[in-house]
Length: 213
Ligand SMILES: [Fe+2]
Image (cartoon, rainbow, N blue to C red; front, side):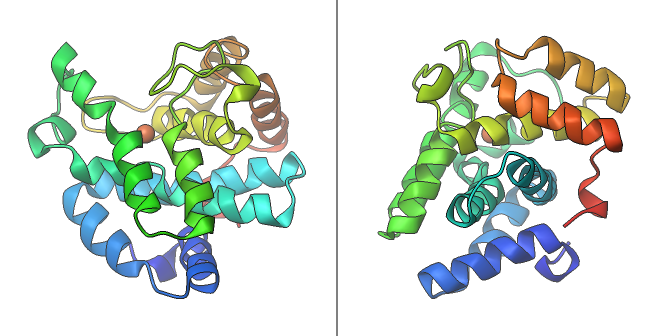
């Protein structure tokens, strides 16, 4: 999928161009897609889903920009994970899972290395996108409002997208089942406000990244 075929990723790229002054197409296209096309497609869907949640929660323009960029790059650190782990079709071993848990740190370091204040903000949100509301996430075990709002939004849409699309090792489950799982994790894995926003948006119609923004 090219950036032109997805409004979400196109917005991320153009935002970056206006804030940073250079094109990030190269990183997106040649790094992430070359390693794992699922991760790139997933990131594109997460951008448009996160933008809908962000708008629903009333984020301001700057926050929306950071949200779009962080959603697009949340898994960019996976390019630093070995193929045999990243592309493994079966369940990961304990050691392998430990390795894959490094991806938020790798991604945040990559973004910080560009030395741009906007990307520093994006990096912080990327770093914490696997934190959990109850403090059981990684890499820092932050809890509740210690976790950046944007990271909390990405965590919810990341899970929603993973549960409603098919990977080689997991069959698709119904949207309602996915919403039920996420609802049960409100206040545990996920931020209650972000879950509420997802449920409210889905009560109108199921969120579909291809049909929005
Ligand atoms: Fe991730």
